[in-house]
Length: 553
Image 1: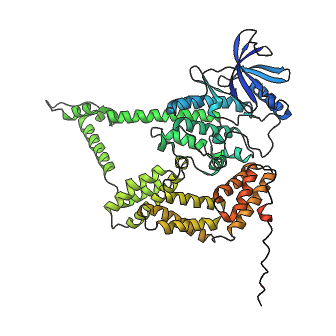
Image 2: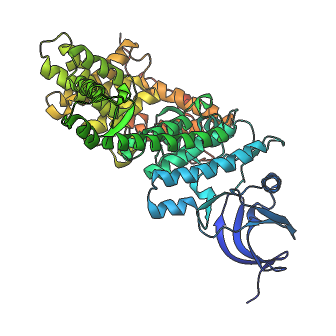
Image 3: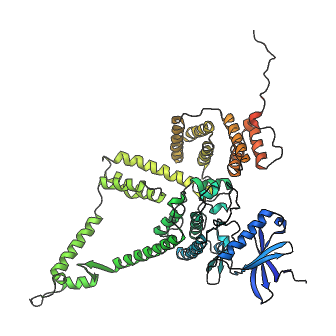
């Protein structure tokens, strides 16, 4: 069988396919070295823009020399095919590793994140923004050394930009809000957001935002908060969860400053966890009295000795029995005070503090640890009525959060009332307040007597009140749909395909069973399919001729 040659390289089996090129195992025939050979795909070889992008990827790799970035060995052109050789990493990617392991211990995930941060620090110092950081682009060499690869859509801030203004590039599950909008600044903090998504996935076994609909996933990145990792993985330290949430902030200014600072933050997490564990172990094993650590047995021995003979004690006062006994009594008093049940005002204050957060676990703790005991102990107290209402509000907030969690959205509604509620919300989110109002009112009518559906009824009533307070709806829903379709066409003409497709997809999904707007749905479907002849826009459809068969006198 004839061996395939590209320049001095003998080409072996294919190991990967990217947007621009195909990667093969290859052998450098001059010394037998094994390399990875990336070849520009034949079907895009005629594209000048992709050729320039391929050349730019080569120029970026040339100036990035770091243990956690794949090494560039050289490249060129063989006939009409462009190629370059790079370091061959045989152990697979973080993506394949995660598929095998499902999720990683947080300690191992931090080790990987540190190496990624080191690679990003080097790239950012060279003016390179990766823009497509994801597990598939993180290779693992023996010993779990991470190698960042695939700079195909990387941005070199020191060179002329090739990406058109307003164009979105990247992988949806790891894409920062500013990257989705296609607006500057797309900078080093964009890569840190993607690293936050990767770190979340390594620990939780799933990305922060998940959806089969690409437009919906992008909206989650723009508008939704990620779920608490500790609710998915209870053994994840809170210090680490807080760090990941900082990486996933919507506003780049609120994220960790840079990749170097992130390495320090990761080390702080390790230190805090170690100190916490050490403190807990020490507290269980010893007692600290009078500036000295005494074990329980030693303290018992000191305080329990019988006097055999009165003898002048010349030891320092802090070592004398009376002082140690006094300290022990004080310690016992502090412990007793700490375990005294809090009063009504204390319970309410602690509940209020927890409810200021955005975390479901804190709300549940406020209810079970403080509000329920308050009602039980002070049923006629000044805060009893308020506590009852707060518990209802907590139940509504928890239900609302659960309904919109990535896991629930993936699995589908838990019951019929939830299905109707989410459908109504979709209409409201789309801006069709008339249909949303009808849907929410139908929930209150259908389930008002169903005990296990009362929280949904209360949530529906809240939405009804909000819509009515805002003025209800100022136009019929068919006119509104036509207006949104017209807006989508305008966005598409301006190159904003993401927002345009979101509108068309919403019309298709929300109104596909509504016979009154069949023309609007058909038009949206054709626009999604990029039909050359989508038909006459619905907002231009001529009115039906008036019926003049009768002429009333």
